[in-house]
Image (cartoon, rainbow, N blue to C red):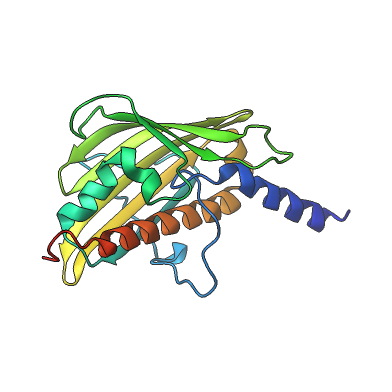
Length: 217
């Protein structure tokens, strides 16, 4: 097997264990899909929530955004009612709140995404534990936490902001990853992260704009 083919095969296999919605990605975007923001056009300043942003030292980083034509409270409810994520995100296969009460600083939740059999890791799924570090209602969220599978650990920091604009709400998101496996191929891991964040925004946009039980404005 040639060196080029070997690298390509490893990259293809590398994708499989990193298919975690927003915590490394999902399936590739459909043909003809246009990313909401290319990596080359990303602003240098990081998103923040209450003055805190992503991990500035993490080697893998991506930021993107989209405008959703739905009321802010509908979008916020979808994003913060984490126990219902599996109903609108196909790659979230289980979800458990680890605390009670409203979504707030300190809220923690454990969720999983499947990992098909592959030579890179024998783990059948990734277990992700997220803890909300900062939150401002209808404005921003920042959570941190590891994604763990057999032979794999990714430390992530994820920031979301929500801003009313003409035509709806601009939802912006930025995430960083650190860990031995992703650091072996930063450019590839960044591309997989891009796919995941773009897919998350598409799912959120679809779910929010499909809601008919709330007034549009």
